[in-house]
Length: 354
Ligand code: AMP
Image (cartoon, rainbow, N blue to C red; front, side):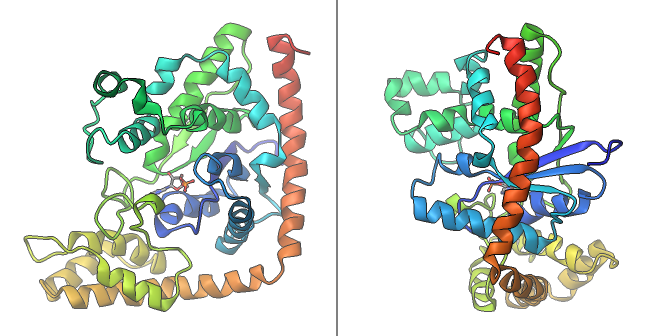
């Protein structure tokens, strides 16, 4: 790794096929930034285990995600591409963090509150942000947590471990993960205060100008695109899937512009034609075809197919050589392990277990 470059780490959970929100929110940045930084790209399989408890599926998804990483253009000659569970220091460090962070602090995590409100069915998914866990406990008692695993609750500290083990400077993520990077920073500070200067404070790197749903890419129903809402367009969709999904996009709009169609179309168009003035393209298209939702959806279908077809073809090629992909993961694990062991040795010394 180059001495003079800053360190970047990020990851995706192998919970299913990645969607275009994952791509534009996070994965595209991985590619754009991989020459500027020393990069670690993780397959976050232990994070996936919080929601996916099926060995065959998890194994399949993990290999698939490695293939996806290579397809979008991550270069294993420069970047370290590895599976989280291959480096046991991640969970080891998460335990140490468990011992120094407090429960109420973790209860403030949006992701945790989200799960609690959904599983306890306290209120609808449009929970106001100020709705706190205190209120949930008041309404439901500890029963509110009966469907929340300890892993889900603890997720931010495993993520802090992922980031801090590698002396990471920047973490490219979607807006929904911003708070988790704040957790990693707070955890680093807390540890440094107790045990002495050990961790660098990482910063998030967020693409914010492309999206509309609270800074995230919208799905076909206008909410944040997410596998768990089943409102996503998979990154490697077939033409048929693309057509079907786009036709399903909800087009609620009062002024002749289907907002959701445009929100999805914008980043696709920009990626497909980087030299075009995307704003002008949409100004013209949406004035010419005002109110013609079918035609506007067809324009999106054309661009999505043009964008996804070459990716899908490249993916098929890479997927036909799974041994090569496994070799790359092995090489990545070896490199990541080397750094993680070094860091962990210092951490163990600091906390007094070495
Ligand atoms: P996950 O599937 O939760 O591991 O997410 C992988 C990455 O994609 C994370 O950096 C997320 O912040 C990002 N991401 C997920 N959904 C969206 C979305 N709808 N818009 C933008 N980024 C997203």
